[in-house]
Amino acid sequence: MSVLTAAAPGAPVVELDLAELRRDPYPAYAELRRSAPLAWVPSVGRHLLTRYEDIVRAEKLPEVFSSREEGSLLLRTVGRNMLREDDPEHRRLRAAAESPTRPRQVRDLWAASFERTAYRLLDRIASRGEADLIADFAEPLAAANLALVLGLRNATADDIAEWSRAMMAANGNYADDPDIWRRAERVTRAIEDAVAEAAEAVRREPDGSVISSMVHAAEPVELAEIQNNVKVIIGGGVNEPRDVFGVGAWALLRRPPALEKVLKDPASWKRVFEETARWISPIGMYPRQLTQDYEIAGVTLPAGSRVALVIASGNRDESVFDRADDFDPDRPHRPHLAFGGGPHFCMGAWVARHEVSAVAWPLVFSRLKGLRLDDSADDRLDGWVFRGLTSLHVTWQAP
Ligand code: HEM
Image 1 (spheres, rainbow, N blue to C red):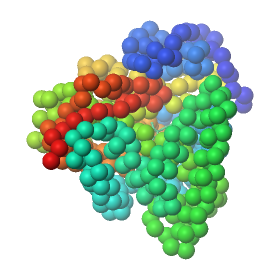
Image 2 (cartoon, protein in one colour; image 1 turned 60 degrees about the vertical axis):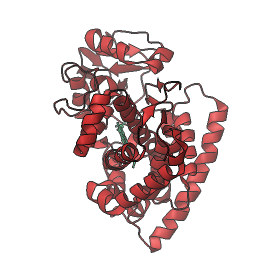
Image 3 (spheres, rainbow, N blue to C red; image 1 turned 30 degrees about the vertical axis):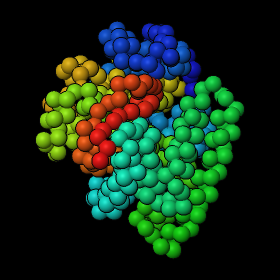
Image 4 (tube, rainbow, N blue to C red; image 1 turned 120 degrees about the horizontal axis):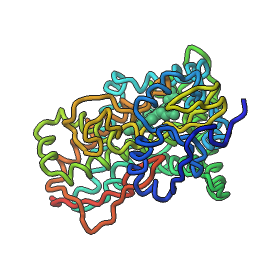
Protein backbone atom coordinates (compact mmCIF):
# COMPACT_ATOMS: atom_id res chain seq x y z
CA MET A 1 0.00 0.00 0.00
CA SER A 2 1.42 3.40 -0.88
CA VAL A 3 1.95 6.10 1.68
CA LEU A 4 -0.24 9.22 1.48
CA THR A 5 1.69 12.39 2.15
CA ALA A 6 -1.19 14.86 2.24
CA ALA A 7 -4.09 15.77 4.49
CA ALA A 8 -7.02 13.33 4.68
CA PRO A 9 -10.26 14.78 3.26
CA GLY A 10 -11.95 16.78 6.02
CA ALA A 11 -8.90 16.86 8.31
CA PRO A 12 -8.22 20.34 9.69
CA VAL A 13 -4.89 21.75 8.47
CA VAL A 14 -2.87 23.48 11.20
CA GLU A 15 0.40 25.32 10.53
CA LEU A 16 2.94 24.81 13.29
CA ASP A 17 6.38 26.39 13.45
CA LEU A 18 8.96 23.67 14.17
CA ALA A 19 11.33 26.06 15.94
CA GLU A 20 8.50 27.05 18.29
CA LEU A 21 7.58 23.39 18.86
CA ARG A 22 11.18 22.66 19.83
CA ARG A 23 11.20 25.54 22.27
CA ASP A 24 7.88 24.64 23.92
CA PRO A 25 5.35 22.36 22.23
CA TYR A 26 2.81 22.30 25.07
CA PRO A 27 0.72 25.42 24.23
CA ALA A 28 0.26 24.16 20.65
CA TYR A 29 -0.73 20.71 21.93
CA ALA A 30 -3.32 22.21 24.32
CA GLU A 31 -4.86 24.11 21.41
CA LEU A 32 -4.90 21.01 19.18
CA ARG A 33 -6.57 18.90 21.90
CA ARG A 34 -9.23 21.61 22.27
CA SER A 35 -9.98 22.43 18.65
CA ALA A 36 -8.39 19.89 16.26
CA PRO A 37 -7.53 16.59 18.02
CA LEU A 38 -6.61 15.09 14.67
CA ALA A 39 -4.93 17.70 12.47
CA TRP A 40 -2.73 17.62 9.37
CA VAL A 41 0.42 19.60 10.12
CA PRO A 42 2.27 20.40 6.86
CA SER A 43 5.64 21.10 8.51
CA VAL A 44 5.57 17.61 10.05
CA GLY A 45 4.02 15.87 7.02
CA ARG A 46 1.68 13.89 9.26
CA HIS A 47 -1.65 14.01 11.05
CA LEU A 48 -1.08 14.72 14.72
CA LEU A 49 -3.31 12.79 17.14
CA THR A 50 -3.20 14.59 20.47
CA ARG A 51 -5.91 13.38 22.91
CA TYR A 52 -5.14 10.66 25.46
CA GLU A 53 -8.16 8.45 24.70
CA ASP A 54 -7.60 8.56 20.92
CA ILE A 55 -3.92 7.60 21.29
CA VAL A 56 -4.87 4.68 23.57
CA ARG A 57 -7.47 3.57 21.03
CA ALA A 58 -4.92 3.68 18.18
CA GLU A 59 -2.42 1.68 20.24
CA LYS A 60 -5.05 -1.04 20.79
CA LEU A 61 -5.40 -1.47 17.01
CA PRO A 62 -1.88 -2.21 15.73
CA GLU A 63 -3.36 -4.02 12.73
CA VAL A 64 -4.87 -0.66 11.65
CA PHE A 65 -2.20 1.73 12.98
CA SER A 66 0.83 -0.07 11.57
CA SER A 67 4.41 0.55 12.76
CA ARG A 68 5.72 -0.16 9.27
CA GLU A 69 5.85 3.44 8.10
CA GLU A 70 7.20 3.58 4.56
CA GLY A 71 10.16 5.81 3.79
CA SER A 72 10.96 6.46 7.45
CA LEU A 73 14.36 7.87 8.30
CA LEU A 74 14.76 5.21 10.98
CA LEU A 75 14.50 2.46 8.34
CA ARG A 76 17.04 4.24 6.17
CA THR A 77 19.44 4.65 9.10
CA VAL A 78 19.32 1.21 10.71
CA GLY A 79 17.42 -1.12 8.36
CA ARG A 80 14.44 -3.26 9.36
CA ASN A 81 14.02 -3.60 13.12
CA MET A 82 11.41 -4.52 15.73
CA LEU A 83 10.27 -0.95 16.34
CA ARG A 84 9.12 -0.56 12.72
CA GLU A 85 7.71 -4.07 12.24
CA ASP A 86 4.24 -5.47 12.92
CA ASP A 87 3.40 -8.90 14.31
CA PRO A 88 4.31 -11.67 13.64
CA GLU A 89 7.78 -10.34 12.63
CA HIS A 90 7.76 -7.89 15.50
CA ARG A 91 6.81 -10.58 18.01
CA ARG A 92 9.65 -12.87 16.88
CA LEU A 93 12.29 -10.16 17.28
CA ARG A 94 10.90 -8.81 20.52
CA ALA A 95 10.60 -12.29 22.09
CA ALA A 96 14.21 -12.98 21.15
CA ALA A 97 15.53 -9.77 22.72
CA GLU A 98 13.46 -8.90 25.74
CA SER A 99 14.16 -11.28 28.62
CA PRO A 100 17.33 -9.45 29.85
CA THR A 101 15.26 -6.29 30.39
CA ARG A 102 12.56 -7.84 32.60
CA PRO A 103 12.37 -6.59 36.23
CA ARG A 104 13.87 -9.72 37.73
CA GLN A 105 16.83 -9.78 35.35
CA VAL A 106 17.41 -6.07 35.92
CA ARG A 107 17.59 -6.72 39.65
CA ASP A 108 19.63 -9.93 39.52
CA LEU A 109 21.96 -9.29 36.59
CA TRP A 110 22.45 -5.55 36.16
CA ALA A 111 21.54 -3.56 39.28
CA ALA A 112 24.88 -3.97 41.08
CA SER A 113 26.87 -2.85 38.02
CA PHE A 114 24.58 0.14 37.49
CA GLU A 115 25.38 1.19 41.04
CA ARG A 116 29.15 0.68 40.69
CA THR A 117 29.21 2.80 37.54
CA ALA A 118 27.21 5.56 39.19
CA TYR A 119 29.61 5.60 42.17
CA ARG A 120 32.62 5.72 39.86
CA LEU A 121 31.19 8.64 37.87
CA LEU A 122 30.38 10.56 41.04
CA ASP A 123 33.87 9.86 42.44
CA ARG A 124 35.28 11.62 39.39
CA ILE A 125 33.37 14.85 40.04
CA ALA A 126 32.68 14.89 43.79
CA SER A 127 35.68 17.07 44.75
CA ARG A 128 34.95 19.66 42.04
CA GLY A 129 31.86 21.14 43.67
CA GLU A 130 30.30 21.85 40.28
CA ALA A 131 29.31 19.88 37.19
CA ASP A 132 26.96 19.53 34.27
CA LEU A 133 25.03 16.49 35.48
CA ILE A 134 23.88 15.67 31.95
CA ALA A 135 27.32 15.47 30.31
CA ASP A 136 29.33 14.45 33.38
CA PHE A 137 26.96 11.93 34.90
CA ALA A 138 23.61 11.00 33.32
CA GLU A 139 24.78 10.42 29.75
CA PRO A 140 27.88 8.30 30.57
CA LEU A 141 25.83 6.34 33.12
CA ALA A 142 23.05 5.55 30.64
CA ALA A 143 25.61 4.66 27.95
CA ALA A 144 27.65 2.34 30.21
CA ASN A 145 24.49 0.63 31.45
CA LEU A 146 23.28 0.12 27.91
CA ALA A 147 26.59 -1.42 26.83
CA LEU A 148 26.26 -3.87 29.71
CA VAL A 149 22.63 -4.87 29.07
CA LEU A 150 23.22 -5.21 25.33
CA GLY A 151 26.36 -7.28 25.88
CA LEU A 152 28.80 -4.92 24.14
CA ARG A 153 31.82 -5.44 26.36
CA ASN A 154 33.96 -4.38 23.41
CA ALA A 155 32.53 -0.83 23.43
CA THR A 156 33.19 2.00 25.90
CA ALA A 157 30.52 4.32 27.31
CA ASP A 158 32.03 7.06 25.09
CA ASP A 159 31.57 4.85 22.00
CA ILE A 160 27.94 4.16 22.88
CA ALA A 161 27.20 7.85 23.57
CA GLU A 162 28.82 8.91 20.27
CA TRP A 163 27.02 6.15 18.33
CA SER A 164 23.73 7.13 19.93
CA ARG A 165 24.17 10.79 18.92
CA ALA A 166 24.99 9.81 15.33
CA MET A 167 21.94 7.50 15.09
CA MET A 168 19.63 10.13 16.57
CA ALA A 169 20.94 12.81 14.19
CA ALA A 170 20.29 10.54 11.19
CA ASN A 171 16.80 9.60 12.41
CA GLY A 172 15.95 13.30 12.51
CA ASN A 173 17.80 14.23 9.29
CA TYR A 174 14.75 15.68 7.54
CA ALA A 175 17.04 18.27 5.90
CA ASP A 176 19.00 15.44 4.18
CA ASP A 177 22.38 16.78 5.34
CA PRO A 178 25.03 14.57 3.63
CA ASP A 179 27.49 14.98 6.55
CA ILE A 180 24.92 13.48 8.92
CA TRP A 181 24.41 10.48 6.59
CA ARG A 182 28.18 9.96 6.27
CA ARG A 183 28.66 10.02 10.03
CA ALA A 184 25.75 7.57 10.48
CA GLU A 185 27.23 5.18 7.90
CA ARG A 186 30.58 5.19 9.68
CA VAL A 187 28.93 4.57 13.04
CA THR A 188 26.64 1.90 11.58
CA ARG A 189 29.69 -0.07 10.45
CA ALA A 190 31.33 0.29 13.86
CA ILE A 191 28.19 -1.02 15.60
CA GLU A 192 27.87 -3.91 13.15
CA ASP A 193 31.49 -4.95 13.78
CA ALA A 194 31.08 -4.72 17.56
CA VAL A 195 27.84 -6.75 17.48
CA ALA A 196 29.35 -9.43 15.21
CA GLU A 197 32.27 -9.83 17.61
CA ALA A 198 30.03 -9.93 20.69
CA ALA A 199 27.65 -12.42 19.03
CA GLU A 200 30.53 -14.74 18.24
CA ALA A 201 31.73 -14.65 21.86
CA VAL A 202 28.30 -15.41 23.42
CA ARG A 203 27.61 -18.20 20.94
CA ARG A 204 30.17 -20.19 22.93
CA GLU A 205 29.50 -18.61 26.31
CA PRO A 206 26.02 -17.08 26.91
CA ASP A 207 26.12 -14.05 29.26
CA GLY A 208 22.45 -13.10 29.83
CA SER A 209 22.68 -9.97 27.65
CA VAL A 210 20.33 -8.86 24.86
CA ILE A 211 22.77 -9.99 22.17
CA SER A 212 23.21 -13.34 23.90
CA SER A 213 19.44 -13.73 24.20
CA MET A 214 19.00 -13.05 20.46
CA VAL A 215 21.82 -15.41 19.46
CA HIS A 216 20.21 -18.24 21.46
CA ALA A 217 16.56 -17.41 20.67
CA ALA A 218 14.08 -20.27 20.22
CA GLU A 219 13.01 -18.86 16.84
CA PRO A 220 16.21 -18.13 14.92
CA VAL A 221 17.37 -14.53 14.43
CA GLU A 222 19.97 -13.63 11.80
CA LEU A 223 23.09 -11.63 12.61
CA ALA A 224 21.88 -8.70 10.46
CA GLU A 225 18.65 -8.60 12.48
CA ILE A 226 20.58 -8.56 15.74
CA GLN A 227 22.76 -5.75 14.40
CA ASN A 228 19.79 -3.64 13.31
CA ASN A 229 17.99 -4.07 16.61
CA VAL A 230 21.09 -3.15 18.57
CA LYS A 231 21.38 -0.01 16.42
CA VAL A 232 17.80 0.95 17.31
CA ILE A 233 18.37 0.34 20.99
CA ILE A 234 21.59 2.37 20.98
CA GLY A 235 19.74 5.14 19.14
CA GLY A 236 17.07 5.34 21.83
CA GLY A 237 18.41 3.82 25.03
CA VAL A 238 20.79 6.61 26.07
CA ASN A 239 18.94 9.89 25.73
CA GLU A 240 15.65 8.87 27.34
CA PRO A 241 16.94 7.73 30.75
CA ARG A 242 19.38 10.67 30.64
CA ASP A 243 16.52 13.08 29.99
CA VAL A 244 14.24 11.72 32.72
CA PHE A 245 17.16 11.96 35.14
CA GLY A 246 17.87 15.57 34.14
CA VAL A 247 14.30 16.85 34.06
CA GLY A 248 13.34 15.17 37.35
CA ALA A 249 16.41 16.49 39.20
CA TRP A 250 15.85 19.97 37.76
CA ALA A 251 12.14 19.95 38.67
CA LEU A 252 12.90 18.97 42.28
CA LEU A 253 15.78 21.44 42.69
CA ARG A 254 13.34 24.18 41.66
CA ARG A 255 10.76 22.95 44.22
CA PRO A 256 12.51 22.64 47.60
CA PRO A 257 9.40 21.48 49.54
CA ALA A 258 8.78 18.65 47.05
CA LEU A 259 12.48 17.68 47.19
CA GLU A 260 12.47 17.64 50.99
CA LYS A 261 9.45 15.34 50.95
CA VAL A 262 11.09 12.91 48.54
CA LEU A 263 14.33 12.83 50.54
CA LYS A 264 12.34 11.82 53.64
CA ASP A 265 10.63 8.97 51.78
CA PRO A 266 13.03 7.26 49.36
CA ALA A 267 10.24 4.92 48.15
CA SER A 268 8.75 7.97 46.43
CA TRP A 269 11.57 8.19 43.84
CA LYS A 270 9.45 5.73 41.82
CA ARG A 271 6.58 8.20 41.75
CA VAL A 272 8.98 11.00 40.79
CA PHE A 273 10.10 8.89 37.83
CA GLU A 274 6.57 8.28 36.51
CA GLU A 275 5.57 11.90 37.02
CA THR A 276 8.68 13.23 35.29
CA ALA A 277 8.13 10.94 32.29
CA ARG A 278 4.49 12.08 32.12
CA TRP A 279 5.21 15.79 32.59
CA ILE A 280 8.01 16.10 30.03
CA SER A 281 7.99 12.90 28.01
CA PRO A 282 11.47 12.11 26.62
CA ILE A 283 9.84 10.77 23.44
CA GLY A 284 7.15 13.23 22.41
CA MET A 285 5.66 11.41 19.45
CA TYR A 286 6.11 8.44 17.14
CA PRO A 287 4.70 7.52 13.74
CA ARG A 288 2.08 5.07 12.49
CA GLN A 289 0.64 4.38 9.04
CA LEU A 290 -2.98 3.35 8.36
CA THR A 291 -3.47 -0.08 6.77
CA GLN A 292 -7.17 0.60 6.04
CA ASP A 293 -9.67 3.45 6.14
CA TYR A 294 -10.47 4.28 9.74
CA GLU A 295 -12.43 7.01 11.53
CA ILE A 296 -10.83 8.63 14.55
CA ALA A 297 -11.36 12.01 16.25
CA GLY A 298 -14.12 12.83 13.77
CA VAL A 299 -12.03 12.29 10.60
CA THR A 300 -11.97 9.27 8.28
CA LEU A 301 -8.34 8.60 7.49
CA PRO A 302 -7.79 6.74 4.21
CA ALA A 303 -5.49 3.70 4.09
CA GLY A 304 -1.87 4.86 3.73
CA SER A 305 -2.35 8.00 5.89
CA ARG A 306 0.49 8.99 8.16
CA VAL A 307 -0.28 9.68 11.80
CA ALA A 308 1.91 10.81 14.68
CA LEU A 309 0.78 9.63 18.11
CA VAL A 310 1.70 12.64 20.24
CA ILE A 311 2.14 10.98 23.62
CA ALA A 312 3.62 14.15 25.13
CA SER A 313 0.23 15.77 24.47
CA GLY A 314 -1.81 12.79 25.73
CA ASN A 315 0.22 13.01 28.93
CA ARG A 316 -1.00 16.60 29.44
CA ASP A 317 -4.66 15.83 28.64
CA GLU A 318 -6.75 17.63 31.29
CA SER A 319 -9.58 15.12 30.94
CA VAL A 320 -7.25 12.48 32.41
CA PHE A 321 -4.76 14.41 34.56
CA ASP A 322 -5.94 17.25 36.84
CA ARG A 323 -3.71 20.34 36.62
CA ALA A 324 -1.89 18.44 33.87
CA ASP A 325 0.77 21.14 33.35
CA ASP A 326 1.93 20.94 36.98
CA PHE A 327 4.75 18.68 38.11
CA ASP A 328 3.30 16.82 41.08
CA PRO A 329 4.76 13.46 42.14
CA ASP A 330 1.87 13.05 44.62
CA ARG A 331 -0.86 13.17 41.98
CA PRO A 332 -3.32 10.22 41.93
CA HIS A 333 -2.01 7.36 39.84
CA ARG A 334 -3.23 7.24 36.24
CA PRO A 335 -1.24 5.33 33.62
CA HIS A 336 0.83 7.71 31.47
CA LEU A 337 1.83 7.14 27.86
CA ALA A 338 5.55 7.93 28.05
CA PHE A 339 6.58 4.32 27.35
CA GLY A 340 4.02 3.94 24.57
CA GLY A 341 1.38 1.21 24.58
CA GLY A 342 0.32 -1.92 22.76
CA PRO A 343 2.83 -4.42 21.36
CA HIS A 344 5.68 -1.87 21.14
CA PHE A 345 5.48 -0.85 24.81
CA CYS A 346 9.06 0.15 25.68
CA MET A 347 11.30 -2.87 26.12
CA GLY A 348 13.71 -0.90 28.31
CA ALA A 349 11.14 0.50 30.78
CA TRP A 350 12.43 -1.49 33.75
CA VAL A 351 16.06 -0.79 32.91
CA ALA A 352 15.31 2.94 32.78
CA ARG A 353 13.18 2.93 35.94
CA HIS A 354 15.87 1.15 37.91
CA GLU A 355 18.88 3.10 36.72
CA VAL A 356 17.23 6.47 37.32
CA SER A 357 14.90 6.04 40.31
CA ALA A 358 16.76 3.36 42.29
CA VAL A 359 20.36 4.33 41.46
CA ALA A 360 21.04 7.73 39.90
CA TRP A 361 18.77 10.13 41.80
CA PRO A 362 19.17 8.60 45.30
CA LEU A 363 22.96 8.54 44.91
CA VAL A 364 23.33 12.04 43.52
CA PHE A 365 21.07 13.61 46.13
CA SER A 366 22.71 11.75 49.04
CA ARG A 367 26.35 12.21 47.98
CA LEU A 368 26.42 15.77 46.65
CA LYS A 369 25.65 17.77 49.80
CA GLY A 370 23.96 21.12 49.40
CA LEU A 371 23.15 20.42 45.75
CA ARG A 372 21.69 23.43 43.94
CA LEU A 373 21.11 24.72 40.44
CA ASP A 374 23.74 27.05 39.05
CA ASP A 375 21.52 30.01 38.22
CA SER A 376 24.15 31.61 35.98
CA ALA A 377 24.00 28.68 33.54
CA ASP A 378 21.83 28.55 30.45
CA ASP A 379 20.17 25.15 31.00
CA ARG A 380 17.25 24.84 28.61
CA LEU A 381 14.55 22.36 27.69
CA ASP A 382 14.70 21.61 24.00
CA GLY A 383 12.94 19.40 21.46
CA TRP A 384 9.52 17.99 20.71
CA VAL A 385 10.15 14.61 19.02
CA PHE A 386 12.66 14.06 21.80
CA ARG A 387 12.65 16.50 24.70
CA GLY A 388 15.06 17.06 27.55
CA LEU A 389 17.52 19.50 29.12
CA THR A 390 20.50 20.56 27.02
CA SER A 391 22.60 20.65 30.21
CA LEU A 392 22.11 20.68 33.99
CA HIS A 393 24.70 22.81 35.76
CA VAL A 394 24.76 22.40 39.52
CA THR A 395 26.99 23.24 42.46
CA TRP A 396 27.48 21.56 45.85
CA GLN A 397 29.78 21.74 48.85
CA ALA A 398 32.92 19.92 47.81
CA PRO A 399 34.30 17.68 50.61
C1 HEM B 1 12.76 6.77 30.27
C2 HEM B 1 13.31 6.04 29.35
C3 HEM B 1 12.59 5.55 28.10
C4 HEM B 1 11.44 6.00 27.51
C5 HEM B 1 10.55 7.16 27.95
C6 HEM B 1 11.20 5.16 26.34
C7 HEM B 1 10.10 5.27 25.50
C8 HEM B 1 9.77 4.36 24.51
C9 HEM B 1 8.60 4.46 23.67
C10 HEM B 1 7.56 5.59 23.71
C11 HEM B 1 8.59 3.37 22.85
C12 HEM B 1 7.51 3.02 21.80
C13 HEM B 1 7.79 3.64 20.45
C14 HEM B 1 6.83 3.20 19.36
O1 HEM B 1 5.86 2.48 19.66
O2 HEM B 1 7.02 3.57 18.19
C15 HEM B 1 9.77 2.60 23.16
C16 HEM B 1 10.12 1.43 22.53
C17 HEM B 1 11.31 0.75 22.79
N1 HEM B 1 12.26 1.05 23.75
FE1 HEM B 1 12.19 2.57 25.05
N2 HEM B 1 12.20 4.23 26.27
C18 HEM B 1 13.08 4.43 27.31
C19 HEM B 1 14.22 3.68 27.60
C20 HEM B 1 14.65 2.59 26.91
C21 HEM B 1 15.85 1.83 27.20
C22 HEM B 1 16.84 2.14 28.34
C23 HEM B 1 15.91 0.81 26.29
C24 HEM B 1 16.94 -0.30 26.17
C25 HEM B 1 17.45 -0.93 27.19
C26 HEM B 1 14.74 0.92 25.43
C27 HEM B 1 14.42 0.05 24.40
C28 HEM B 1 13.27 0.12 23.65
C29 HEM B 1 12.97 -0.83 22.58
C30 HEM B 1 13.82 -1.99 22.12
C31 HEM B 1 11.74 -0.43 22.04
C32 HEM B 1 10.98 -1.10 20.89
C33 HEM B 1 10.03 -2.13 21.46
C34 HEM B 1 9.19 -2.82 20.40
O3 HEM B 1 9.17 -2.39 19.24
O4 HEM B 1 8.55 -3.83 20.77
N3 HEM B 1 14.01 2.01 25.84
N4 HEM B 1 10.47 3.23 24.17
